[in-house]
Amino acid sequence: MVKIGVLVSGGGTNLQKLIDAQAAGTLKNGEISVVISSKDGVFALERAKKAGIEALALCRKDYPDVDIYSAALIDALKKRGIDLVVLAGFLTITGENFVRAFPNRILNIHPALLPSFGGKGYYGLHVHEAVLARGVKLTGATAHFVNEICDGGPIILQKAVEVKEGDTPEVLQKRVMEEAEWQILPQAVSLFCEGRLTVENNIVHIREAGEVKKRGGKIE
Image (cartoon, rainbow, N blue to C red; front, side):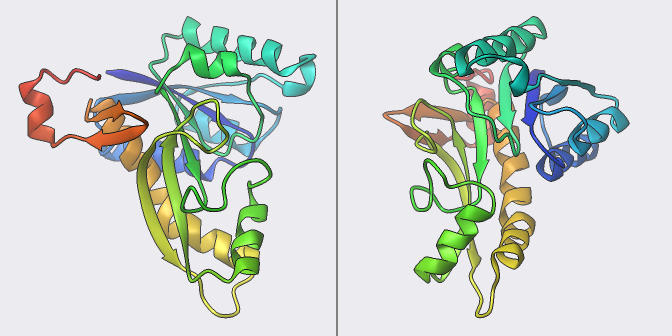
């Protein structure tokens, strides 16, 4: 069973979809072991507690710099034997030491079709504001592994969403969450936990379930 640690900073709607998938049995071979927030008092922690999952706050403001904060996160996750780290609305920057500690084992959901509308400054409503300002007709969400480049890690899954006439950033944000983020994040996490993902030359390959069984479910 793959032990999952979920990092959050706010309400935890993406976290809830992971909790729901776990309860429904569609998050295969994985279990959420801990939820860690970068802020105190966020509702995501209440969601975790309600589901019987360990919940704790490691507040960014309590640490003098990014690397020291990242080291605290690494320590908390490794003490709990976490195999996969999921960033579910985690709005705190981490250092390269964090990425090195979990190579191809940190998974993020981004509210656009990367590599478009990604990188520094593209988070939350800013992404949807930029999409509308550019006038693109399709946007969506991307589940990807995290590397040292902001939003530059290997892409696991993507799902497109229509941009409609008269959309506001808030309306578009809700549609992207409902039609894309909430669907592909649990799928990507389950694929990892089933051992169906491999990364070669920054490209993710997804094996058929039967092929994994033949190879003993090894994650490469």
